[in-house]
Length: 203
View 1 (tube, rainbow, N blue to C red):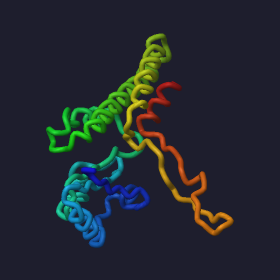
View 2: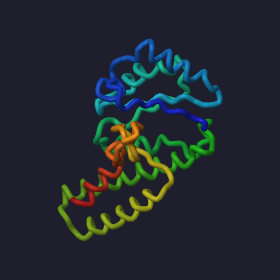
View 3: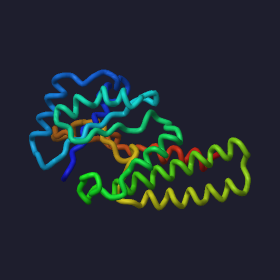
View 4: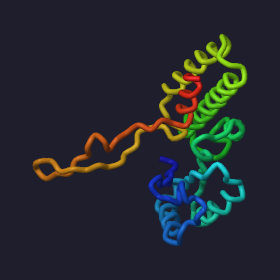
């Protein structure tokens, strides 16, 4: 393992109250995590609102970097990022993990993120076409192409943009008194890309 990502989804200041600064205890915790295994890079994640600016993100994440985080990872802005955000993301991804000092094992994540961003751009373009020109043969053909590309992306070994299994423990006790996780504890979240594609396919 080369990276450990801290992205506490249940922490209100990770998402809903993301502008609030990290507390002294959290920053001390980042330092402890960063120092625990020097060969593992600590990444601190954040899901800001759509109104976030670069300066806002720097103000929020700079203390985490000073505390020892080697990477900061501001996630997509809100639940419905605009096309410009996806274009900027795709353009900003390195072509090779080694170009930015990352282990080769990260390459598949970079490739999946780039392809996912491209699919999101295609989905948004299709939604715009249908909104301005109505449904026609061209939009139907684009839907088939989008579906094929999306299905291929789903066969990749990695999940990006919020997709994947989530554990939200719902524990109970069995007859012998042992704690067990109920089936409701586990669910599969759709990614932001999936949601856009579904909208485009039903337009």
